[in-house]
Amino acid sequence: MKAARPNAGFVLLMVMVVLVVAGTVLAAAARRCAQNATRAAVAHRDLQLRWGTLSCRATVMPKIEQILDDSRTRQEPVVLEARRTVVLGGLPFHLVVGDEMAKANANTIADFLGDEALRQAMRKLQAGGRGFLEIRLRPTDLSREVPDTAVRFASLDQIFVMPHPSEWIGLASADGSIARRRVTCWGDGRINLLRAEMPTLREALKGDLTESQLARLDAMRREESPPALSQILAQLQLTGEQTQMVGALVADQSACHSLWVCVEGPTRRWYRLYVREDRGPDDATEWAFAW
Image (tube, rainbow, N blue to C red; front, side, top):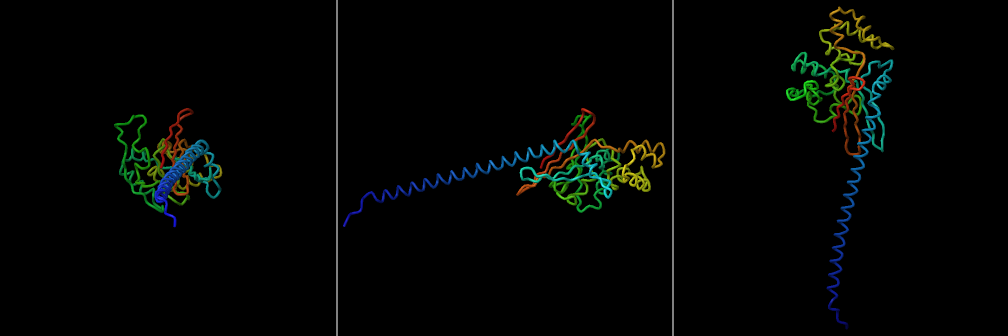
């Protein structure tokens, strides 16, 4: 009978210690690899999102007028927004372009009629929509801003309570708030007669045009080749004073446009809003918002 070697238990113990240490090291290495892979995936996604959004902005913003004009049809001659979807790097980029001068300007209403009139207008302009956004006016303190550039309402969340941008703009045309088609904070305050919806025109020109004149205006702009602004005003049979007053409030061309970029990822969505106002050949102002 052979006696057991005195160091057999020690060897077994050392083997177990080595296995435990090796397992710990391998687990730590696997965790680091997983973390590095996650960081790499996030960095790749962020880079893809950034360059995809910038590419859409650079490509689409200069062509918004053309896109809106091309979207007019015999059945839908009044078009103030258009939607397109492109896939970049496997991610769908949903684009919504709009004419900001085809919407009622909150600053113009507040400046001429006051905040209470603005609240009433915001309620009326949401009539007929699927949802109603709570109105909460939070104007900018103009005493702290540069007088030549400051406006009381510089973004939509200074007018409405918007917990998430999907409540404003949806991936489908029927989603989101109807206020997106009727309210703006940007532009020179005039409203584009050829693209604004009738409820918007009715509110923006309240007291300046009768219902029969608005109906005549709607008929003219639905023609295959709508007349110019001067011809429209002439055919509305306005008095000289009315022509001057209405002419200062309306336009038949737009210099302020918006682009929403909604990126649909596997687990979440990203929203970007770009607004550009062209004030002259070499004078443009841009705003950018991100969610």
